[in-house]
Amino acid sequence: MSIASIHVSDLPEVTYEKGYLLFEEGKPGKSVYVLKEGQVSIVAGGNEICKVDDKDTIFGEISILLNCPASASVVVEQKATFHVIEDLKAYMHEQPDFAVHVSRILAKRVADMNKYYVQIKQELVKSESNPAARFSKKLWDLVVKVDRFWGREVL
Image 1 (cartoon, helix red, strand yellow):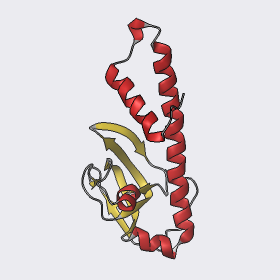
Image 2: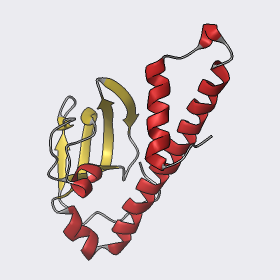
Image 3: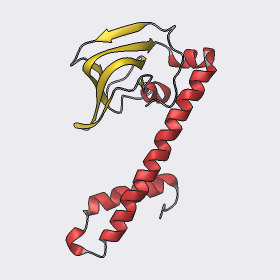
Image 4: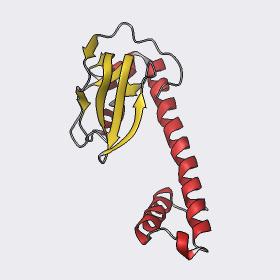
């Protein structure tokens, strides 16, 4: 996700061909990649989430910042060149503007997820009055879990 152009031209570059697995869901990440050109596919839980070809999109920051396995796989769809950040935390200390940039990206993701979550929940609430359109109990339970995560009901 790119919010605004960032200065990363001083970083080393790598190029990968179609089919290269940049990150594997559930496996630890070591580096962060910033897309210079090309296209990748984001896959989570066996489902393609999206294709990305936006310059300056950052991949791998969540795994590094939270010290956890990758939350999705990233597969090169079209030959792609990336700037590589080997030590994200050190780079953020050296480049505070980059740290702000990553913070904005993560904040935008949370805001977007909140918006989509509320839309899903509103549809579920509407469907309660229509037995033919009722969603599964499992889906409703997931909505309740997200409500608990935020510490209150969203609707």
